[in-house]
Image (tube, rainbow, N blue to C red; front, side, top):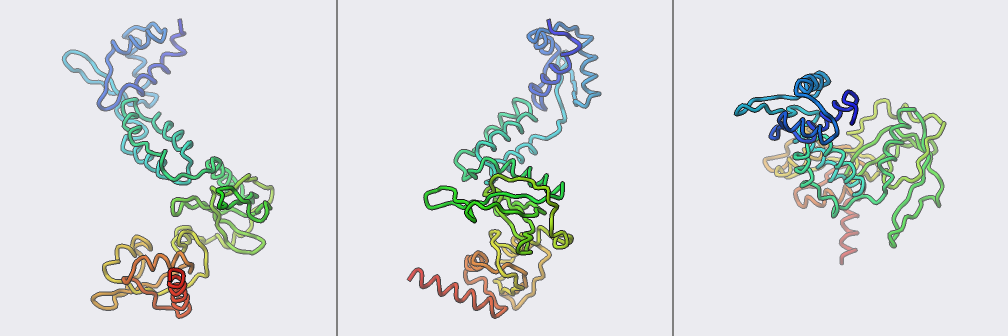
Length: 327
């Protein structure tokens, strides 16, 4: 027989958390029957006291009487079902988390719900066919980078790119990168580490899922002066697809119908200057790259770069290159 005082609270808590929610309740008969199956002999009076102890512990157990029978259930949990569904959706749609790790995380999220509510979460799991990262270590890469940031340490790692044969090819012939990490950003469905490269004295970013064998070094980070007023959101907004390029203040003319697109991309704080009844212009600071030009091209005749002349010349050359490529 299991010792009552050492086990009953754990068994009762598991019973209430697994088997009850806002639409599922249990009776005293159910409780006594469950404990008996677990090898615990208990009396009704002691169970009442135990339920009160669980309430004091923080388990929100409510009871109501219906047709002469008292029913109990857990009313409020640490997470509401809608919140758990949101977490599951975030995990399953995150490309930087592998399919295997996604399923593991979702199973852990399910543990915050009753068995009945967990079945609703399971119906939302469709991770198998999504395009997910193949680097299983990314989950731990993020943790190491956070640790390095918190301990003010540099990190070293290897960085790879994919070959046409779908093989990992180490950049710089396998030489280790040494960077001072300062921030992590989730952009364009990928995780990026933003850090300072002491050799080039530049802020750079790297895809976390392409980083291998991360080590936290004993060297302290460099580049503090560059990050004292660093705005991560502003940095990411300037990049298109997190591709770097020469930063420029670019003026673009848009059709009025594209105001929603502009606000979605640059935020509501952007200054909009009406040109006439059909068009408006905005000035934005961007890293000029082919990805930026592709975004402008994608808006068709509704968007046109009007200044500076150097950027207008670049996009004209890019358009001519595309015409020649598809001639």
